[in-house]
Image (cartoon, rainbow over all chains, first blue to last red; front, side, top):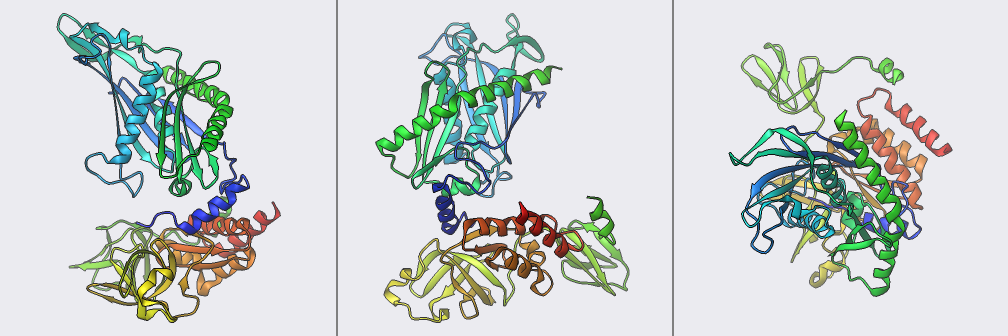
Length: 277
Length: 230
């Protein structure tokens, strides 16, 4: 399959130097974000997120499991991603490849390290029984920036999810009759930023063309605070990042953080509210 | 949207593979169809066109099927001692031999002329069992040095080119860009400014989206004028 050409890449880079992009966005501008909640009846919580043409479905499923030996009084979290061949010709069926594993782990780490979920409240009996949360991510259409879409989807699905009814005597979960209880979430809602770099310029929210042309990438998950704190960070792609560039990237994210946080927070709240009615 | 309805003369039927188009011995199966006893059955997804006895299907989607003489745009994926292995967006492997390049190339260092990842426009000169052979022998064929590549649905290429090249000529004149449309769905655009190239890209995308509309050339002309005034 022919990917984005080096000719197009040169053009994108040339244009970005002047702060312009092919679809008339600014470097720090996202495409339109749409969030919908409560799409799946079988899942405890679910969400659909669209960023431009990129579309991701996320589901949250709960189960009773044994805790890990190093955290006997804490619940479990598992995030898996499936990149469907339908969403982009570059993905294939079969066991998850690098991109899918990375996507799942990045979302997992961002949520885990932010302490957004109060895992201690998910404990039923220490050392024996805890709630396990499983987040499943499916890509419906990949037009770049799957990670940010998946992360927002995971947040929305977690917020929408309701605990299923657990009968302690019978040791059985009744999925069909959910309680009104929500998951034990804290105020530390993490927001994910992926900063991409082409030659000397940095920008948010690439589309397919820009993503294929990008050389450097820095992924940050941040939690509210004054100033906001970084809870997870990963460098991706091939380009070396110099110290100056790194500082520039952090400032770039810091500038965007406040508006983006309130935008996402508002969108998720609206989506969860809409589902109730 | 009202105008589109008015200009549409007759609705052509859409068929899917396996669907019976017509039955009867009077009809002949054309491109994209086959005969099964009495019936003529579609082999591709597309619009039915009948001209006299002949029934054929104009495909709306699917892969590019190479034909001899097609001008295509491809990418170098590997280099061998006597030419370049290429990817031309077709389901067969393709090769551009060194001999088919009408200029001097240092045989010990052919990557100097074209390296892996480079794009070129070429003509298909033979299709054999072992693969497709390409040639640079022709006007305007060769390595693509500058500009940008746009991907479109290969089945929409005839609409982008238009009757005797009328559509592509219109876009070229209005945007001041050099444009090469490969039959395989890759389009190369080069203009003086990036804005011009993006304008040409927009126009091509407009054509591919509205490819089913009658009187498209006039519509594109209007679209180009409106965009220019902005």
